[in-house]
Image (cartoon, rainbow, N blue to C red; front, top):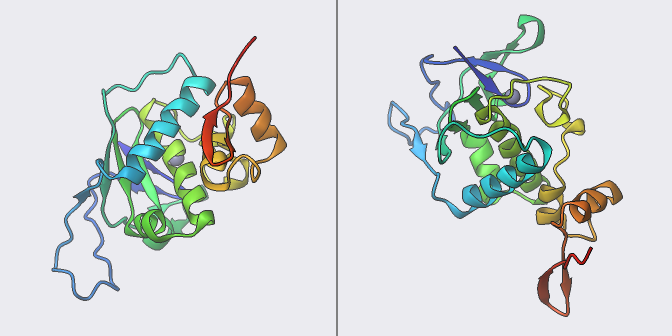
Length: 196
Ligand SMILES: [Zn+2]
């Protein structure tokens, strides 16, 4: 069984976790940390759930909730068997299972990153959530492409990070069509009313 990972790589499930070399103050073994309850995780998972309810409404996660664990990634295998260093692996999920493994680097981006980082984290959760729904990496579903992040577009992530004004026209159309557009009016956050 293989863990499908974001960005470039596949990880062997059950492989010995690498120890973060730069973390000299850490103990010799680095345990996984359950961050499921963290607000940023719950927020991005909720957006991912909504995204897939729109995109693939017939799919259902096999577990009632997703678990998110932060742990060091290991080197993996990318396209054509090329070794991908652990540092390039952001996250991984076994298809059809409900635990999303997040690298320490992605976690730092999630809690300390700038807007670009937050958008990438949100997109990564959407991608990993797709794996929990049973989707493999595939170029036929843009969000599930293995390595080409430019094709991964989640209007909900764009709206979250960049706001309505900072989102693209296609994002606006998607959000409006699915009654998910939100905009600010004199400081009040309003969910756009649907009257048709
Ligand atoms: Zn993947």
